[in-house]
Image 1 (cartoon, rainbow, N blue to C red):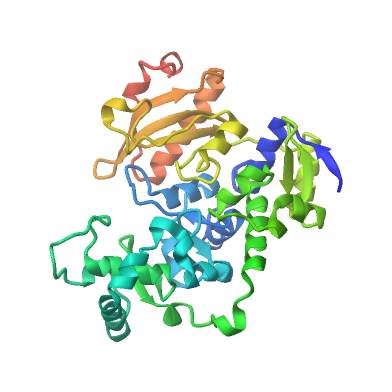
Image 2: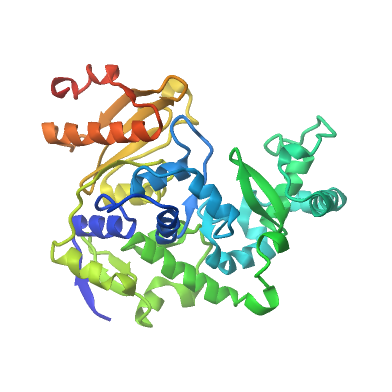
Length: 401
């Protein structure tokens, strides 16, 4: 097993290359590129907060630049993507459906994502929901009349919503499309008719191995402790531990900047060589979603980028340090700061609430120019081209604006 050395800067660049975040995309965005980008990341996390673009759109913008947001919904409706629990709720390429089928059949390990008690205690109600969809076709939660105002505390959902989510988690229902970003549920056999358990389902150990390899590939290079989080995998079988897979030739290895073994997918052999030779260069500046794969593992972001990041939208306002929904700023291979902003779409105004730079970030005219150009492109894509920079005049940017 060949072992080489990878510096911290080279590891960062290899990671960003694997994520499609080294340089600006060539040519215009397209629906095909949206799908290719999701395949490159393996999953696209879903979140509904929309003070700026909702997270899945923002993650794609960071990689593709301006694109049409409806392309994502179209790919879902066309059956090229499906939704399921992965890192969290995610859009996943349909060809990877089989890797998640074991979770659907035995979802007990999904924790709060699966309400075992509701399934056991309400079989009749669950069956009524399923029969409604069978008879009336694809349905949203709001298509069901709430028969009772009583709640049991499970997110204060009405009974039909709980039943829909249980049926979704067990794979009996899938998301056929989204309507105004609301899930539209339908029977699995109508959404994904090509799938047949008896014919297509492989053993759970092989599926887990494939996910380990996919996680390493998406990460570019990975410490063993980073791998399971990418798909929120439970304890890895001994046969699927990265050191076992490396010994069997499924993964390459390198010695990291701190002496820790790093694992690299063989498909990245050329990228690894370029990283070692200093031939990978990062040239873009991008705002990232809090749920971007680069930062969604906060410990990894701290380890790899020395970026201590927390999402403060669930923190009381008076206790927030940086803002409600801060966006990490990626510039030329480093996470240099974070931006708190809000898109006022009706006014066409993009409000910058605050911008904080990392202590290690060197302020320069070039850096300010790159960041402001990125913000303007982001605002233009939101159709809020009037960028309100009033807060920046009193910040460290003041002398450069």
